[in-house]
Length: 109
Image (cartoon, rainbow, N blue to C red; front, side):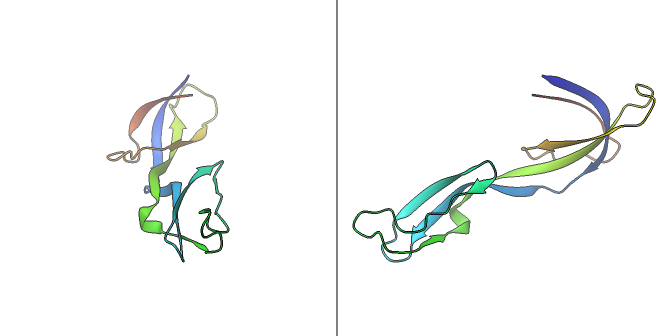
């Protein structure tokens, strides 16, 4: 576990990031769910249903699962270091109410 004390310099708007894709066959309406792994979504090329295996799979954006990501830029507390250090911290939860110059403690792995 790492703990950092500092001032929030900048917070991005929430950025939606896909965690699970929802694909539907254009011929038989068969549904396939695909998880995002290492930032990549593996799209099925053809329908996985035995009776079909020829239809093209279409991504149905409205049925996909997303989470919010925010990028938080921190400045370490002045006086602790000889030089000012800036850190980027990514949060995968919505951090509403954070403003620039907020003093925060962060803990993470």
